[in-house]
Amino acid sequence: MKKVSLFVDVQNIYYTTRHSFSRNFDYNRFWAKATHNRQVVHAYAYAIDRGDPKQAQFQNILRAIGFEVKLKPYIQRKDGSAKGDWDVGITLDVMEAAAETDVIVLASGDGDFDMLLQRATQRHGVETEVYGAQLLTASSLIKAATRYIPITEDLLL
Image (cartoon, rainbow, N blue to C red):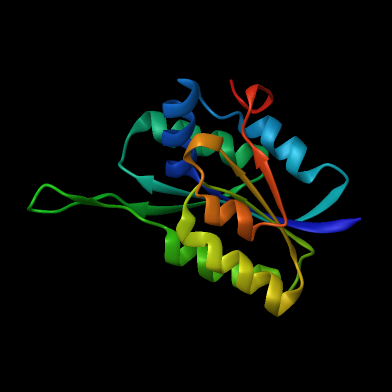
C-alpha cells in the first residue's frame, strides 16, 4: 500500500471551482478518491482565517474528514489590497513530507507550484498528483505532475 500525503490550497480550489462550475468542491469525495487503497501520512488544508463563523464550521468539517487545517490571518492592507497566501507554507510542508511518502497529492491550480513538484520528484522520487479545475489550472503545473486529475462532476457538490 502506497503512502500518500494530501495538500489542499483551499482558497484556490474554492475560487476555481466556483468560477468554472458555480459549485463547491466535494472534500469527502476528493478524500475518498485520493486516498483509495493508500495509507495517509499527512493531510493538510491551508485556509485563510477571516473570523467568519461559516468558515469555522467549514474548517471543522475538513477536520472531521481527516485534514489538519492550517490557518493564516487575512490581512487587509491600507492601500486596499489583501494578503492571505499559503505558497511558502505548502512548499515547506510538501518538501518535508516528500521524504516520508510515496505520493504527493496537491489540490490547486497555481502554477507557482510547478517547480515544487519537479523538485520533490527529483529529490525524493515521489509521484505527484494534481487536482484542479481544468480551465484554471496552469499548464506548467499539469506538466510537472506525474498525474493530473481534472476536477469534474464527481468531485463537486
